[in-house]
Amino acid sequence: PKLQLHPVRRLLPTMTTVCKTLVILFGGADNDFIAYNDTWIFDGTTETWSELKPAITSHFIQPGIYHSAAVMYQKASPCRCKESVIVLFGSSFELGNSSSSI
Image (tube, rainbow, N blue to C red):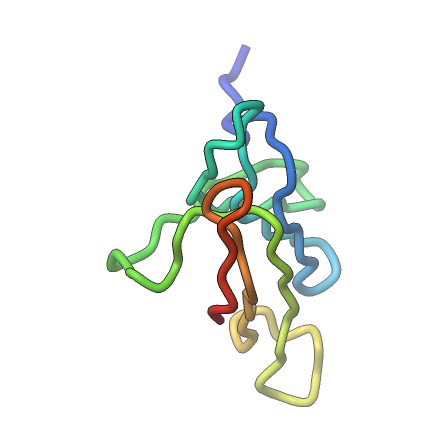
């Protein structure tokens, strides 16, 4: 059988729908509330997960839980996936330590 890549089980991630069949998953934590800093995309058409790796390491995106996300489309049509931006707001890097960063 073919090996399927997928994110590990987690608590409190953010999942954001982009277009009609794509879902972005960011962050979350394990059972000990150690936060993840990974990003995954689920393609509902093929029912597969792919891990997204940033081209450069950013100090702005920290591991997190308890955050919110929304999609901002840069063009009028909400079906232009490559022309959209996901805004992530707030986060907690550990239980009781919060942030208001974007």
